Length: 83
View (tube, rainbow, N blue to C red):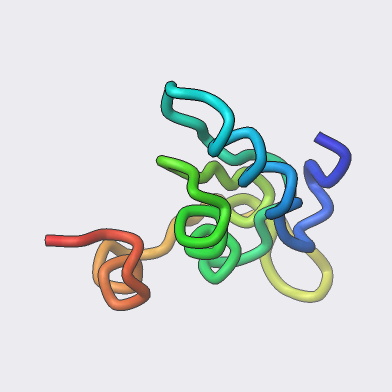
């Protein structure tokens, strides 16, 4: 939670240690700044899912409020969604 809202990436080592230690699905939260962070949490953090708040709300260098989400095509291209 220390990285929540910072948009500078998840603490991959921490979430991996939790995901590897438990037998329940783990969702990474706190720090996502882009699609690469989501992918990193799933692939390298061993999580089942990754949440992103600020990256879907704030846009541009002035962090204007814009509620958005990446398209399914972009998520598929980056390997987050698999058909």
